[in-house]
Length: 328
Image (spheres, rainbow, N blue to C red):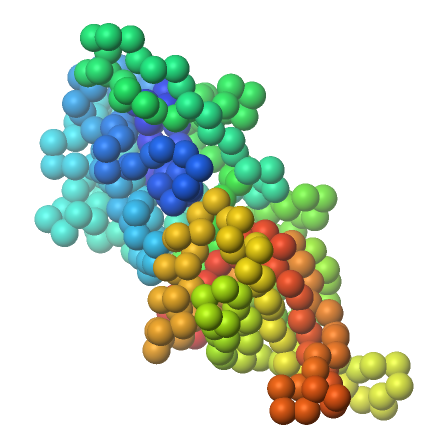
């Protein structure tokens, strides 16, 4: 069992760890989880203790991570009897254990819907004099119209606007095929179990509008201004004029304007440059575009194009490169 939510004092709302990560890297808002105060999401438990009874975070500020991000109890954290989080204890390593068992690191809280409209945050008015003990002087706050449902959430968040959350659910539970078949996911007008919504890149012609993923073969870095990601697996496709299927390479392209205008530009460049230099197996996940067969001019002979399934990524909020050892 993991902390699916935590109450953020300065925002007066409950956030998932993925909301916190999104805020940490967002260059358009002032937010640093290391300076924020997080408390038990159980309202009754939280009200029974002083504001100093806090939770910690794990992997809230690491751009690249393998182990699942989460909130955690600190050695001094207290809970009332009956609180659903009382069984979580902090070990010396900082990893929670429940009833003496080591946490297996899986994301247990599956959002049933990925919202395509990003959760908005606006600044809260400056706290009045004397309230510095309670609120930061310059906090951000969830916009009133976007956070109405979140205040009453006691269990796993039913919806998320952070792409990393469903991706982590899929990656960390990849070995549990039956679980992924049972858990539903909706994105836009499309609904399917996690196992079907995440489509391996070589089968992208089976259905459009899904989350496509695959192992990366190469990342072409065009002077840190734009990038092309080539996948290891190829698509077997039969054109009308062909007698049988042929294998075609797959790639996606990220242009300079997209990167320069991205609200998490620094974190993204750190992430992808780390990937370019990494010697470990990396996987790419993206949503919002479906690669299609195109003719691309060859480098050595531009007049002789080659064919590739290609797409231009349109939204970096729905694009991730990461290690995923369980997928190898």
